[in-house]
View 1 (tube, helix red, strand yellow):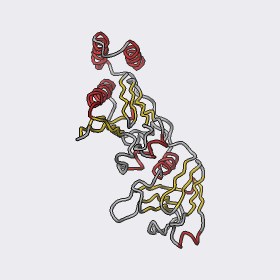
View 2 (tube, helix red, strand yellow; view 1 turned 180 degrees about the vertical axis):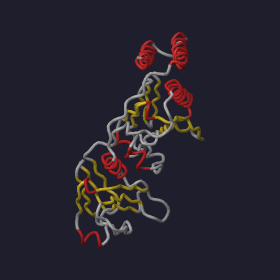
View 3 (cartoon, rainbow, N blue to C red; view 1 turned 180 degrees about the horizontal axis):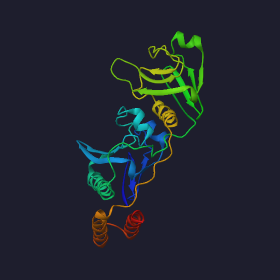
View 4 (cartoon, rainbow, N blue to C red; view 1 turned 45 degrees about the horizontal axis):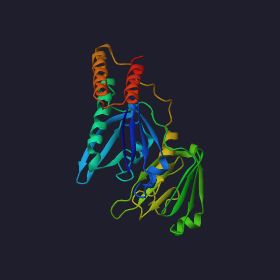
Length: 282
């Protein structure tokens, strides 16, 4: 078991699953707090790295395309501190962060996880019901229906039209864009009968904001809708390593034994890591 705990949160890796738990402090972004603990299967991981900085750095996880609805719908728009796959690491914990990254990379190498796109989502996306308030609307999604209720910031066009509600079955796409420059951030739903695209402030199928960079938790609503629009059966976990990789597994077991003998790993950590590798072999 590799684990790191800092004020920003904690990451734990048992050689099969990486568990991400956000911190509870005021500096932790609302998106991460609402998401809560995430269980990321090793098969969903593309890479991991510790990125050093002036005050410590970040531990950063990159997922394979198609593994996670939130990653796909955000399309790189969630930067720190909203990115759930980035952990702020203080200077005194950089060594632990580098060790953690090494452990995950070694597991990726042993099990030969492909870096390319996944055939279906390996993570479920945000739970429903989910809602968010940003700019000119509150948007709610219960798994079947999407509802937009306008706030006092809505334009006269939206106010005159009143609240909007439509079924997921009517939606053909969802687009989420963070606030950038002088433009608007937006969460737009595209319906089957939609013929044109209006500006975000006038589109009755769109939430728009001009102050919040990430639009509160609107990205979570977008991800929940996107996951259900593209839902497929969960992909099977990768099988055991090919015969040619057995030597790499045996070397890893030997390395774990040495770490245990030297006191780096406790009895419990060594047993958990060993069992995880043996289960994967079976």
